[in-house]
Image 1 (cartoon, protein in one colour):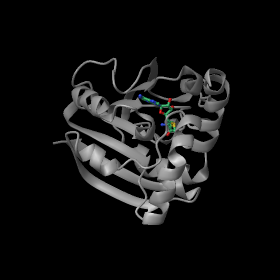
Image 2 (tube, helix red, strand yellow):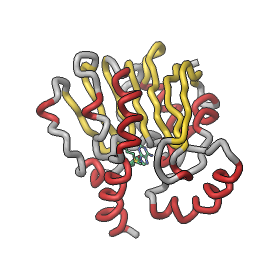
Image 3 (cartoon, rainbow, N blue to C red):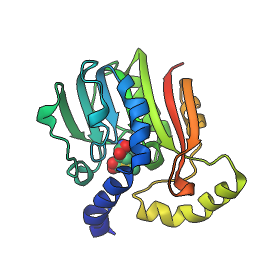
Image 4 (cartoon, helix red, strand yellow):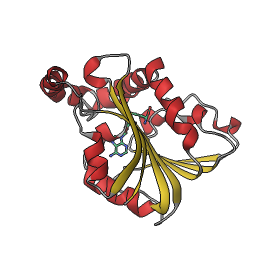
Length: 205
Ligand SMILES: C[S@@+](CC[C@H](N)C(=O)[O-])C[C@H]1O[C@@H](n2cnc3c(N)ncnc32)[C@H](O)[C@@H]1O
């Protein structure tokens, strides 16, 4: 499993996240980022082309997997803002209190083992009037897909680097000190158990 996680999984995640359907989702969320931005679980940097260049001052990017970040194909030198990558987890963010105007998470919450600790950290590093931009796949609205999500999840979690198919995204956000100020949901094209998307904006309660 160690070799799979190091050599196979990063390429698989990059391929899966590169699909057109999630690209369209990134376009809907990332342009709203402004100021000092923290991207949690940056993966292979697929959001980088969607930041509005004139709105972002600086981007801090974290991910526990350096192997996934090494799949990044965006030339950082072509971006007008500096990108600092740090190998770190959402549960222990290497940043001072009240540092960021925007925290971005796309398709990351599914893979964070301790979401309570992660949101404590997000609350700590986000400015009081800052915003959390999110786009996540999660619990399906219909009973039959929910059933399949639960059946497939144990194997999926092992092969997908800890990704859980059926997290209740709005509840996790709202039960951890945030209010959702805007949210849309829909099935995006793709494999149904991993395709129900929730995206929007949240702020500290
Ligand atoms: C499905 S990938 C999504 C990558 C990227 N956010 C995107 O939209 O393409 C999930 C990412 O979450 C990262 N991750 C896993 N556990 C994490 C944690 N505890 N804190 C932060 N990121 C984590 C993984 O390494 C991986 O890069």
